[in-house]
Image (spheres, rainbow, N blue to C red):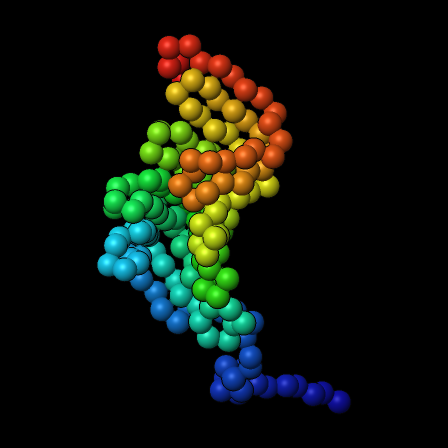
Length: 170
């Protein structure tokens, strides 16, 4: 006795898929965020994927990295944030930045880490990952950081080392 199963292509294609597909895709994207006609944030990304169907919280993926410029009340640059990958969640207004993350403030101080969360609603950035902060006079390493989004007031959770620099030697 021999039995065989055959599948109609239409039946196979109708099976549910666990793979999410973006509802919108954008290349070479620039987004401007304003408040009361005042420029607050400029985000640029080479690729943007928007997922807002069949998900509990809509989100945007920036798979090829992004660059964000933050502006103060006078529309002058207060800090920048860049990373090689990002995910922004619409409802909670949080962005997770990953891989070669850098934040630079208006004083030229630079934060480097592999993971960082930007809490847009509270205008804060934070991480539990190892960090390195380079200032004109020192290099500070540690694990974890809490800061305002302008990276002008920050607290390092666990400082693991401080190197004093002489004559701006990096």
